[in-house]
Amino acid sequence: MASATPVDDEASLVAQLRAGDEAAFEQVVRSYGGRLLAVARRIVGSEEDARDVVQDAFLNAFRSLDRFEGNAKLSTWLHRIVVNAALMRLRSRRSRPEESIEEMLPTFLEDGHQTHPSVEWGESSDVLLERREVRELVRTAIDRLPDTYRTVLLLRDIEELDTGETAEILGVTENAVKVRLHRARQALREQLDPCLRRDLRKELV
Amino acid sequence: MNERAPNGPASNQDVRDTYITCNEVITFLLAYLSGELPPEKEHEFERHLAVCPSCVAYIKTYRETVKLGRAALTEGPENAPAELSSELMSAILGQRS
Image (tube, rainbow over all chains, first blue to last red; front, side, top):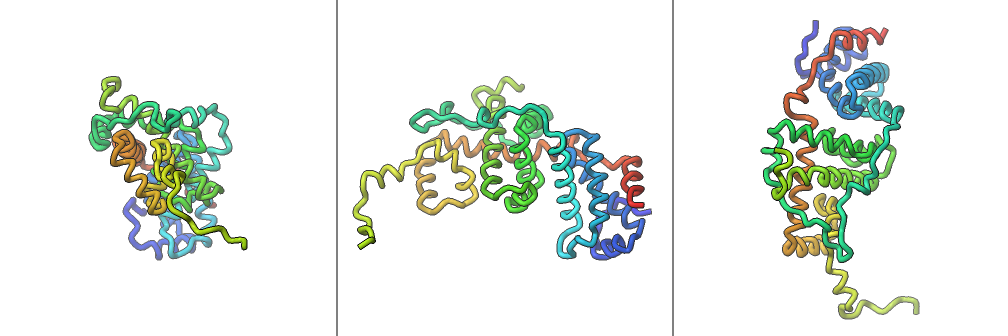
């Protein structure tokens, strides 16, 4: 039985997959499944949907092995298939009421100054992240972003796709990706700021 | 002759064009951070940042936001990668036949 060891000879593994080798399929699912489930969970939110997404994605991947190009990494290829499957799932059930992103963006006075001047946060992100409640606060804030923006933030900043890949997968222009990413980051920052800024930090402690 | 006269000495408009506000810095921040601004615009950003602690703090916390977002969804015990359950493993491997 194959174990969950890192795959160090992808080329021969892919050849085995193409030949329909059962052990090779099992090795792929064991090696990459957990990480891919985490990716799906980040995008679709629920555990049940994430499991369906991973199942659909592996089915798609195994059926389209002939389209896998040898110069790509198998892990990257599977990651993209899961991202796509998760986005399809998200679109099919997109109905939750959303706040407008405009309401979450920074505001300015007529002369162009910030309505509320920015100050640094009391602690660096490394220190903040050691606290579970901060990680929870950030996740809740990301979850409040409208899907259009949350998706771009997830693909660019968390799944680390580049602008071109994100544009292609979402069917929008690269410029739209840049605009959405910037707004999503701004909206996330606006939500975190009241809890983390140096002068008002007590709320969270 | 259709061509316009070459640019003359700097007008009042040129001087105004070199002044950017916090609103512009924050709106075009991504392009600045990605190095996508033309050199003269980048220079204007730097002149603004030299005298605007609020925008400097904004940029610092914007960068921290990106790090916090990434880490909150990938780090900590709550994000430890789970093994696939045996049911899901069987479902995935079983559906090929």
